[in-house]
Image (tube, rainbow, N blue to C red; front, side, top):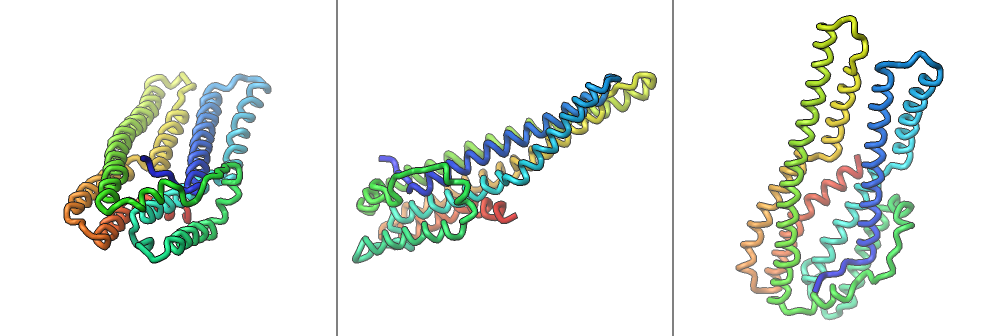
Length: 289
């Protein structure tokens, strides 16, 4: 049985992924236009039409910059991710009967508290409302699987949490750490190659001063884009953070051996969710930049 997340999580997650794709694709398109325009200007044909074509390419790049600035896809990306991660960790706390959703005489009061939490998340992220309008989901905010898991015995809940949350997250962070490390190396190599090509053009110009058409500026621009892309994707930062979190999750998992009571399970779950929420905290920080 897989845990089904609240409707609001699905909406925020879909909105964040959509904003991320749009932002990254438009960023790449903007870079391609700049590189194309710079390359075309290296050897400009002596015609008005060719000059107008170059101007059109740069105007298109300018228009794309303005469009990105107005739409703020990057902020919606971070905002949606922060909301989704906050709901996910609260969902696990609810399902495990961890604080602040511990056992109560009336389960309705716990459900009311969870719904209030979702309302607070919406109120503090009103600017996301305009963007998530097109992502509709009519499922429940407190799903049947959340209640089914919550109704399990302490031993069953503990086993379920270890398998479906702890182990799943540890595998995710380990995989992502390796992926970002690999990407960091690839883009670092691209930066070096582009800079080396620019230096090669400079040296070749010394050797062949009569030849005027050296694409030095184009390679410099490509190197700049590679640097900007690495900073945008934060490959090195994420690789280190994910690797550290994966190790921390392994340590936390070993602490489950001593969990035997509801109070100990609540503390264990909250400690684990605190480790997972570091990424969520980063999204919140980026959102407010």
